[in-house]
Image (cartoon, rainbow, N blue to C red; front, side, top):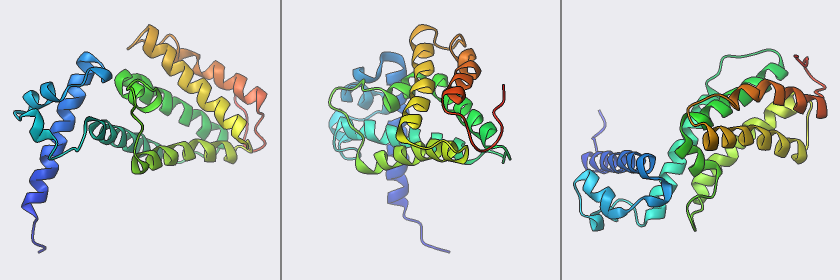
Length: 198
């Protein structure tokens, strides 16, 4: 049996508790309203003590960004197989849109520049690039190549999410447009692999 590092376990548990509390605060008050004093009070610590776990407030945002991107990657990688690449592309679009609208604050953190001066660190950004790679591969599997097609695809799906979150959070007015938007996309960028479903 390996020897447990109880100090590291306690540190990881405290970090997780701080992040959970940070999510509670930003979901209640907005991303930019996160204050170290309020966060410390939420977890029973002085604000200064938080810096032993996160060197700056942006480090908390960075950890939130990384955890959220890992959640997206888990969903992208744990899907049952589908033979037709166009079906896989459509499923990816549904999955991504659903992920974006189920938590508007998480969507803002990942896909909008809501927090002044915040940019994800290199490791967190690498996770985002990995997630984007799923879209690039799904398009390539359909025979759709090029950065312009990828930009159009992500812009359309993320745009539906932005409209949904801004105008009817929790609803489905823009979510219901996804099949129609995908039909338009596949007309503009016809797949050369798989069948295009109408």
